[in-house]
Length: 174
Image 1 (cartoon, helix red, strand yellow):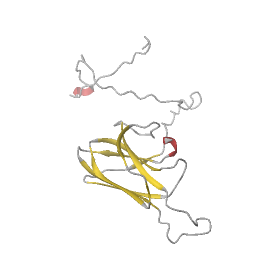
Image 2 (tube, one colour):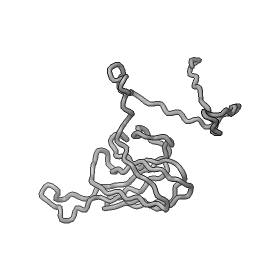
Image 3 (tube, rainbow, N blue to C red):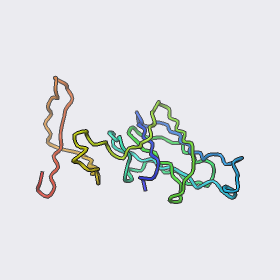
Image 4 (cartoon, rainbow, N blue to C red):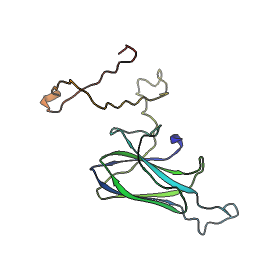
């Protein structure tokens, strides 16, 4: 159900970065009406997963788990720990499916980070493709774990950065 959950992306710049996350439900005190009488705080928590370094759009499947908080039927849930260098997505959630609540999200680290909401599911089609192309139906993500026998070559303009490419062969087709 990732497509229904809000998603926040952030990048941790170094290993062993101290992280504090606090998810807080809107205070219900003083907001009691006949419609909200008997309403209690929802069971809330959050999930943090590591994603690809070039992630720009919403996640549609669960990635590598980094943190899962406890789910508490109270005003807030809290986590303090460390994360290693990488890009992450935080998903505030309720324990029960299709149950919503208003919340505040606070994230503190010992190094500056930028937290961005992910709202787009996929890139917009190019202006040349709007009439003939349809929306993406699925996305395939491939992670290359290692390679051998690669020859180093220089990139454009004499740069010392090595560049490589991967050719994927499926069922005998390139």
